[in-house]
Image (cartoon, rainbow, N blue to C red; front, side):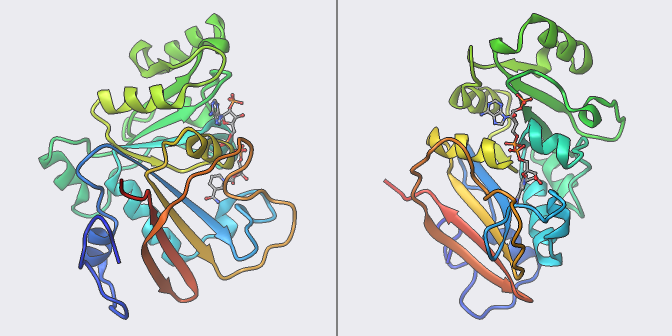
Amino acid sequence: MNDAAPGAASPGDLLDASALERLYAYPDRPCLRANMVSTLDGAAAGNDGRTGTINTPADLVVYTLLRDLADVVLVGAGTARSEGYRRAGPRTGDRAARAVAEGRAARPEIAVVSATGRVPPLLAEQDGDGGGVLLVTCDAAGTEALDRARGVLGGDRVLVCGRERVDLPAAVEALVRRGLPRILCEGGPRLLADVAAAGLLDEMCLTVVPLMAGGVQQRIAVGTAADAPLVPGVLIESEGTVLQRWLRPRG
Ligand SMILES: NC(=O)c1ccc[n+]([C@@H]2O[C@H](COP(=O)([O-])OP(=O)(O)OC[C@H]3O[C@@H](n4cnc5c(N)ncnc54)[C@H](OP(=O)(O)O)[C@@H]3O)[C@@H](O)[C@H]2O)c1
């Protein structure tokens, strides 16, 4: 079942890559979609604090597809640091060429959100083959941090949105104005809670992996209280991994 692409699949269908792509197609309007993975008991990372230890092959397929379809990956600085984010590589298969034909970039941008204005080290590295990096920050970062970030990324790649905290609605507006309306938020949990609390969550893609992790890892959204109801759009099972796409209710 899928609100954005009605009739794209029926219960029991086996999905190939193009059917999967239709099921996850972005709507024809600016859209902020989040994508997260969780264990059965709600852990947003393995006991080593990384998502790599709870991923499954099916999760990787959808993770890659969602990046391929997005204009920009919005990510918290905490996640970028702990997961070692780098500039995005090219979209896979013929999706890079199709994006270019549509007037979009061959690689999605990475927009890292940081109140302190520190660019995570691996995103600061210049990489001829990688996509662009934007820093989304606020005045509270201070002149020194802002100047340093502008020196690393370029003046027009530092988006100052808000005074004490990042004003996320203003940040999303700025991304859309830059021609990046397909926004993929990859967390982490603090950023996702803030996004949901700000009423910005249009879609929530969630992978549940068949694993109990125990431990002390956080849930997929932590911190700011939110109240963001969603309705089901897609439910897929692959070797025990359950892939879900939840949508903002219409009206
Ligand atoms: N399960 C999943 O799908 C998934 C996805 C992503 C991450 N994770 C896991 O989550 C953990 C990382 O969690 P985290 O709490 O560090 O996540 P996070 O939300 O990525 O990072 C928090 C940091 O990001 C910046 N930030 C986030 N929201 C902000 C906002 N609204 N305004 C301004 N700055 C904001 C701040 O950086 P500054 O300190 O620079 O100001 C803040 O300290 C790791 O274990 C990672 O593996 C899991």
